[in-house]
Structure formats: C-alpha cells, structure tokens
Length: 447
Image (cartoon, rainbow, N blue to C red; front, top):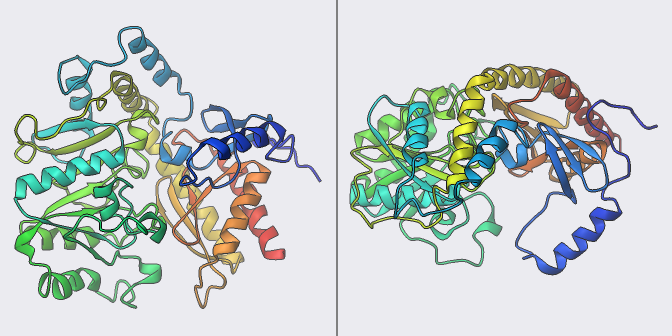
C-alpha cells in the first residue's frame, strides 16, 4: 500500500534508472576509499527536502553530514555567494588582504565562548582546523604529547587521523601515525568502559585519566593539549554527563594542559547553543569549527586565545583557506541563524524528537538508548535491552528501509542512528520523519 505524504515522496523505488547509471560511472572513476551509506544520487536540495535524479523526495535528517544547518540552497547564503562571485573568487588571504577576512573573523569571535581577546585562522576543512590546532598548541606549549578520547573522530589527514580513534578502517594500513598521542576512555555512560554507573561513579573516568595515565606513563608536564569533542559524533552521538567537562578541565588546568574543543559537528547552533561546549560550563583554550560554518562550502576555522595564537609570520599558512566565497557564506550563515532564531528551533524540535523517541523506546526492545542535545540526537539500536548487544545489522536495515520510504538518515558508532536535520526543520516535517522511522523499526522487528 502506497502512503501519501506531504514531504517524503517515492515515485520509483530507489535507486532508479538514472541513479544506477551515475553510480556505475562513479564506481568506475572514484576512489573506493569513499563509503556511501546507500545509493542516493542527489539532484537538488531545498531547505530540508532532498530530491534525487529520479524524482524521489526525501526528508533530510542528516543535513548533508551536518553541514546544512540553515537548510539546503539557503536563499541568503546563495545571495551572499553570488554577490562575492561577481567580485573575485580567490586571492590568497595568507598573502594579501580583503574585507571579508576581519569581518567574518570578528563575527565568529563574537559567537564563540569566552569574553577575552581571540584570534582566528581560516583553512579549508575541519581536518585542517584540527591540524592548525595541533601545530598551534605544540608551538605555544613547547611540549610533544597530545591526548584524545577513544571513540574520537577528528579527521583523516595524518595528524587528525592520529587523534582519531573511532574505527579501525580509518587507521589500519597507515602506521606509523604521529607519535606521542594517548587515548583515554570517553564518558560513554550507556556503555561505561569502566563498568561504572553514573552518577554513583563520581566521574571515575576523569580520576582514571589522572591515576592511570598522568601518574604512571604520560608525564603531564610534557602534554601540549587535550583534544575533545563535546559530544562524540562518529563515535555514536555520545553525550557526556553535565559535570564531566568541568572536572576534566580542572584536571587539565592543574597541569597547564590546553583544552582544544572540536566543534566541527556540534557547532553553529546544532545543539541548541552556538557551540556544544557551552552546555557544560567550560571555556576552552582553542576551538575548531567546520562543516556548517559555511553551509557546506570548504571552510575550517581555528579560534584561540590571543596570547596563544601568537605564532610568527610564516609558521602556518594556506593557499585556499579563507576563500572569499566561503567567507561570504559563513557571514550569511551566522546572520541567518540569528535572524531566524534557529538555535531556539533546534532546542524546541530536538526536545520534541527526544520525547517521541523515548516513547518509542518504551515500546520497542530494539531501542537501547536515546541521547542528544538540540538537533544532534542518537538512537542506539541493540539486539535486546538486557545484554545491550549492538544491533549492527538491525540499525543498517532500519536506515535503508527509512531511505526507501523517503527519510534520509545515516549511522554513527557501531549501531546508532543519527538524527540531525537542518535547524530550519518544521514540526510537521519532524512528525512525518519520525513516523517513517517508526515504520522502519517495526518492519525490521517483524522480519
């Protein structure tokens, strides 16, 4: 029975004939290192609606991998890019000046946490923003060691990949990686690596860092920086306890270690604040931004305290970073989020989605955990609630069945469904998307 919906419209079972032809050519010419979640061939995007080349229409619950916070083909962003396009497309901001550079830097400084003087470095991507933060923190501290979390994803360039500890395939075959990087357990309370229970544990995972790492084999005086996602993205949309980062920050400051917060997925209003770390009452030394900052155009941003970002001319630069088209887009994104009050919408819709998902969790044995902030929500699929065995096959089946029905969602971690629609999503579209998701869950259980 074909269901008529307002937003999700499947006219031909995907992938259709046009899509199959493009996929065939893609496999012939494109590096096999790239993984696609399913054969969706995009033709156009309008706000939270994605259309494929065969005329099918999908509700976007992944925001182009969290890049399209203000929606696809946003009018204000397109106008800003078009206006700049008629002036010039490039002239290397690390060699010359143009007006957008200090303008956008000021706008970003104003929205990042901390009422102190800051400086900005523009690059081309989130991974490059991480690389800049690695170089900067090592230069400032004159120390050789970095620390990061198990389950972290910070990118795939060599330095960023060395911090990443999410999936073996992202590291296997590329050793030796950057030396002197140590990974510690992330506060994944649903699957606590220390087999503890929050809040009775008293955040034993922070004590573990000090007692088992900094007191035994990682000299704290040799650590330049600790890199952290405020909410783990690729690791499974894992949200730490509310007081976790305060305790961690206190430990780091005790030893003079810089805190670098990776807001590449979580930033730009995604979690109901400009940046997710604001939920945890901590002001980091360095913040990295990417993805949604320029609505999917190539832009990475590294923001640091002014006294930290005081390295000499020539110590770090880039040819294409701070591209004027990307900067124009970034300025429009910030303006759109403010003007449309999208941060509030992210909170409102996110709270509603979690309420709906928690109701579903009561009904279905296959849903083990619901977690998230704003419109960054994880739905962890398990074989059964008692054992908590990851429902890896089940999660994939749910994702594919949802896509076949007109809902574009993707996975994270081992078996977590990511729910991250644009901040512009409406309640009506949310309801339709959740309806499709529940249908897909029920079909997976029944089969």
